[in-house]
Image (cartoon, rainbow over all chains, first blue to last red; front, side, top):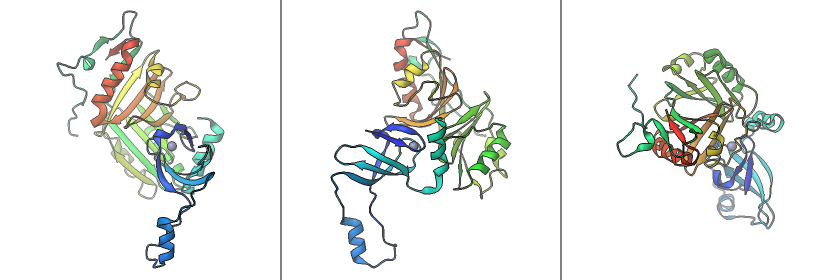
Length: 98
Length: 200
Ligand SMILES: [Zn+2]
């Protein structure tokens, strides 16, 4: 399985670390909404198909990535920085082929 | 500065670390391995939105211009710079003390400067089979069009994290954690045996 890091380009999955389900929304730390915390900790969609995931390119640029992976085929249909601050670098990578 | 001791000092039972030709070198060694021992190895990181100011600061201090793009870099043989992550750059100088030159240029509002000079070991592999040997270690494209001179890559060999800069058409500088340098060097030697290698 290859993941195309927006900074580094296509790399083997061995360079990446799975950081969990990308659909979760963490409640504010002070939140006392037990249902929200319960959902954050336990509720998973477990889809047979496209799945939002967080991965870290831990053996490369170390950026955290938002990945859409098909759980049936392992096809990866989208990869983006989890934080939107570095879109410039991603664009250069796509355009400049460095 | 504290005097540095190389982690690659030769030992009696470790022929790979001794200068000279090794392996299958009957027709001449096809790679040359050396430790470049730069005086300064720095890691610079820009706060979000400050990348251009950091790149300008690197130019001011080193005279090196950074080409646009992820992983881009340049070298003049004495100083080198390359991007290894979004907004982050490795800057290397043969001389010690580069970190103090950045004080006042890369201000706390722009980003951070971390001196890794004692924490990394720089290994150079050069020669017509350098690409061939490295391709056995790292699952990245070493061909010149995909990995141009000056450019840098962050990758790993098993759990040994490595930053690689191409500093010539058939020359690469590899930065590894100092504590891994000795075993990585030996692995590099064993992988180079089939093409013949010279330790300089
Ligand atoms: Zn990456």
